[in-house]
Length: 195
Ligand code: FES
Image: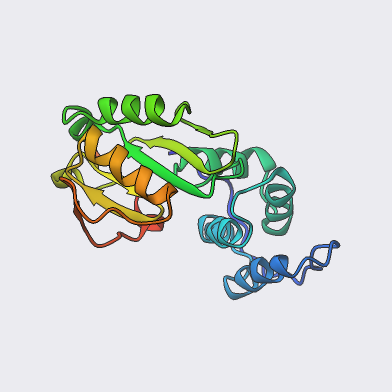
């Protein structure tokens, strides 16, 4: 976990983003609701990512200024947590947990199978923008290993074959209904801390 910066809790009235992009109003509302507290950074980043799909530099600069935090700190938090993305995501995305419990249950084979099948390295998006493959350290559901998150849906006890099948079906526009994995309730990812 990065070090905690000096806290500043003084509520401030700030001007909105000069672009006039209405998505910034969502961020402004979150900032206001949380009284511009620096502790609110992660929640504000979540709002920003939901609104824009990823955290572009301009967005991080804006948030850093509004919270009066060093940009380096905001970058540090945004890159520390795997559920934040600094790059545009594909139309579909799959996060494969590579934590210890998942690793010993073939998570690396799942990643290798996805890389081979869809021609994309972990951390990247296919050239057609359809699919992003990501890895995470621990998604907090080790008892269900190996765990992956496909388009926000948490899947448990997958195999390389079942994963490829489900991703292929997703890209074809239909969710796979069979395979070895069992869908489980989606955890509040904002509460899952990468370790
Ligand atoms: S190691 Fe994968 S969920 Fe914990």
